[in-house]
Image: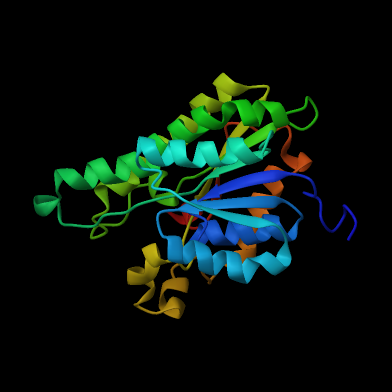
Length: 258
């Protein structure tokens, strides 16, 4: 295939939380576009399945690591440093959630969710900065793309007791903007704020029925894998080389109606 059909040919990307859900959608999309992809998560079985199913599309490697810990960040960084001299894009997508009524919401829910959703974004970006800067050019800087959430842009509806999750995603959006200012012009830093996509994290919501849920979304459907692949490809490609510090909702219009 030529560069028009594989526009990311020759580029290296890292996708955390890449074994399933949104991370896998991102990994598949950029793999189809020609990127070499490294995926990482705590769940080794998910990674093995993803590699087996996606390897016909291109070169993909799996690195088991708990990125909510300093050791996990070191494990992934060491693996990449041993194999690559440049990383063109880091997708900080690994995430954790916790739901419980306010009266019962435990302190441990804050520690776990903030460690994975916020602290790991900063720590891994910091650790991979030499590889990112090595890949950067004036016309096509390296990229850091963080997964936020519409729940970090507006308060979830009453009854969605994900207090630490929504707060963590708001923090991801602010961290994205601060890192964008700090790392310009060498590295562009943007965030995707997904609405409802099918994943383990949204299984509880979708158990009410995808059609019923879709009626509450202006575009009358939940997100599809190609929607996530499209925004990931755009943010990794030269087409987005004048965008940094942006938080881009991919939500079917939910934010426009609340």
